[in-house]
Length: 314
Image (tube, rainbow, N blue to C red):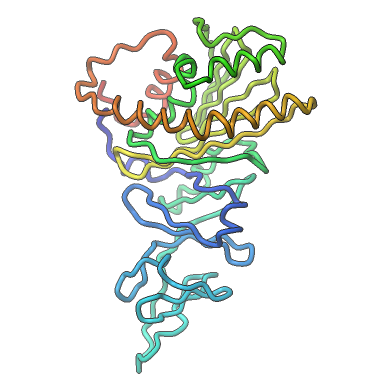
């Protein structure tokens, strides 16, 4: 594993869950850089708190939601979900003065984002989000036992797609519909299109696919098929991360859209993501990282490490 200090990655915005998911479930707990957090949907307000009651520290997701209030399941302390303020502490003769620890949370497109870094750096941090986040994505997420940079790379590592179960065969049918060549088992040429402080974008010449890479999110844009794939990576700790994938088809042809979503729900979600879990976990166990030999199809990874990896030791 490449060496880095997690504190160097605090001042970033992270995509957590689809808005529609949080709206339906009302709450969602997760871990970011070793810290347990929880999101709430409070009548259209999105709030993020540390996932601990201020009394005995019971996780808030073990409590009870009551309209715009949360009641801790241990002693019944009640908090206002709009601001985290303590409303009441039953049986306490003197009301404590405290509130829940709160972080910034907001929606962009169809995704809920959070920020736990220095408040003074928030505006700059928002520049690390994709400009056009999909509004109504088909989504899936999973946990990868690997550092975030390997998860990022799995989104732009074109050659490994070939080895996913049945993916090459189905993609062959898909390319026939699109009247283009199946390029999965061929070499490709990557060229840089654009680079700013916040991102870089490159193109695979043979397929026309454009890939925009930001510190913790990436967009894979198949321009010919009019499909956009957006991935958001959120570190759990230095050795694991949460991978959220979203897809949108803008194809005017109904059968193109059907093929895209069929592939997502039939191959990507149940087959490809579990295989990536296995591959990334076992690759991460390869201790002598200095023995890694990168080649020309590692264009995305090499540029990611060059641009966004704060303290690389390769």
